[in-house]
Image 1 (spheres, rainbow, N blue to C red):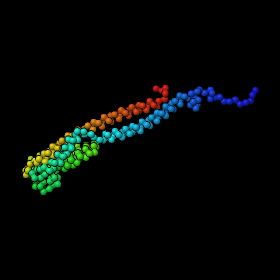
Image 2 (spheres, rainbow, N blue to C red):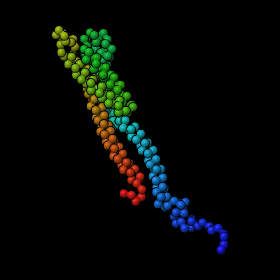
Image 3 (cartoon, rainbow, N blue to C red):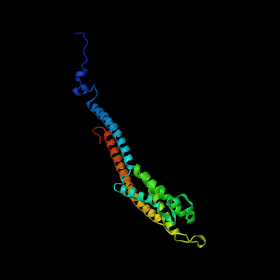
Length: 231
């Protein structure tokens, strides 16, 4: 009997698919490749989803007034021109804004000064800033200021036709500058409200879409985590 050592042919008895995977069962190897590929796909999808969310947040924070931008620009120009016209008597909008001697002579009420300040800050500068930057937040602030200015303008109009303390009537009535400025502020309030409301509706739809995408991603992740053959 020969004493030569016998060669171990364990690899020969191993199935071909198992030898190809280095002794690892073919099913486990396939599962590992599937999990590795799924992990790579998840990482790429997460990076893509993060970039998409950033782009969505940027778009959601912007406004697109469209043809309303022309109307708003014209209303701003009209509001600027109203400051040159008589607010009441011989006092124009700039006299009321700076509380000049002409405004004191005409006994301009506080509500008139509040109206002119809101007209300048929110109606003119706020609207111009919102048109230039196209930011939804600035448009929303301009809307609030214009709405309050409309109320102040109505009170200013009322104060020029109502006797004050002691029954002393104002020396002059409502001027063209007050009327035109108030109408311009009404137009700005209306158009900014339409723009802000449209963006608010878009925000709600975008949030609902994100919730649906999150549910779909969670469902896809659960399916990828299941091993082949499991239910």
